[in-house]
Length: 282
Image (cartoon, rainbow, N blue to C red; front, side):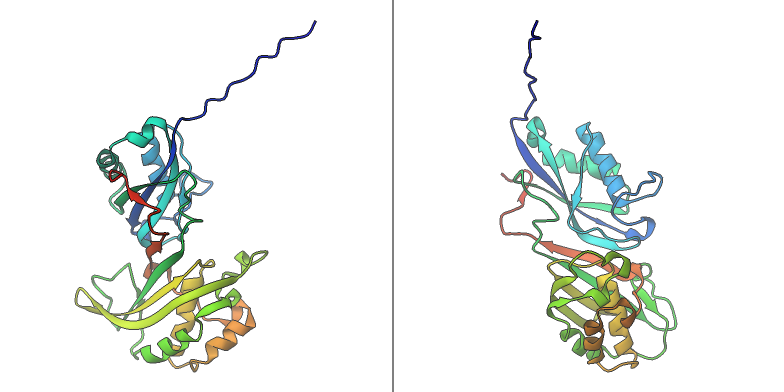
């Protein structure tokens, strides 16, 4: 006798949207943004996911604009996750208040947005902006300590020479020499570097050197290797045109050191106009 086949109904949410959290963090106490296999390892994503799961009372999957390494900071990281049904109607002010209360003080919730169901904080990003900061001198910086590379050298770095060298690297190029070698296998190392400015700044009474970098996307350790290579020019070890030889080599060994993580901050991420709407500003 034939067995009666009963169709299985799968519940489909009547509404699906994307929640986007903008956050900043001091990366010194974290093993990077991305969660690790060992749950005991502290990560930014782990802290944020824990908070969101308490608020939404379910498991969540997070997508970020850019995975920062251990020790790297952020002023404007963006994280997206899908939300369903009644979750789309929750009051944004209450969500932010809860996130601030649950996350540790070295994470700052800077904004809450909604986007279409198909939005991805990673794949919809047009470009990422980073800033790297160096403090010079024989004595340690005070306010910039932990967020800048203390370059313990008496001689000044030649900022003009570093900026000249930086301009030679702009455009669509193969940045394999500026990428962590083990992460370059099997992927395209072509990137479009739109900005790489080197200039002096003053913050809280301290003189620093800033490297402002913008590209459509970055390779692993790319910004820190760019900075370490430009420092070789700044200290007089090479002429500015040397960076073209490094680029041409397509070999990580040709470039300078990877600058310390503590000097790097994810400063901003650009998205298409109108893609993000303040959560309570429909």
